Image 1 (cartoon, rainbow, N blue to C red):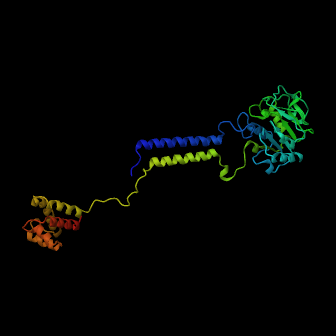
Image 2 (cartoon, rainbow, N blue to C red):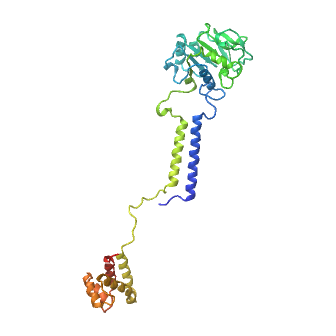
Length: 366
């Protein structure tokens, strides 16, 4: 098996580093808020049409601000609090009934934006909403919600007309703000833009927003289930972008592993191949020598080496006679054919010479 080439390893390493860097930036962005955005009129939204600034304003004004992410029909509602239903869009059938019971028990409800028939479950003879643009507005009724309010700037994308609710702020027969007859429970704001991030700091919009929440210290809850936010627990509470970040990190780690590891291939042998024993080599060499014509000349160095080993192992002097060397070979355990090949007067048996050398070399001290 072989490793990936250096250019491939460098390329994959750079790719993994880029992915990791982008995942890190995405994670930091998720912690710091990132680019402004979110559903219109949501207290989570930091975009121009969001209401995150309004939620912060109420918190600074002394209200306890919370977000309700579960359906109103499944939540416990406290009449001592103010519910803010800003630009709700579609409303499930059970939700208006729950809000109606909340108002009947003395709760305070602020509704902004266009509504449908579901408002009948909360307000008797509610006004009709239209997309008519309101120009300048003026105070039409001295209600508590308009204390300190002289001018309200809006985007002009809605107005109330008719119905039994009291027009409090508007122009002519159309109103931007209408309240129920007793000036209590339900506050209807035709256009949510005065409470949105883009216009909250204009004219007396911030004062109007604080007044709509009620007396200082009154708890406030933004109904966020109408903006698509729901309750989530366990793994379901992990944002989707975080799962994407985890996946990219896993891909980067896998890429780095591939870049640093070996290619896929056959399994590695449990043991490495060793060179063959010297005996095999000598016998092979002896076979080669046996087949050549000038056998005596070829085998002479091998025989001289074997005889020298006999003398060394027997402790004989360099001037020892052939008879002394032969006797020493017998004591060392050489066979008769090996002794004849080393010390005989006839033609040497190449195989026997090689075998004798192998035996002596194997048994000699290193």
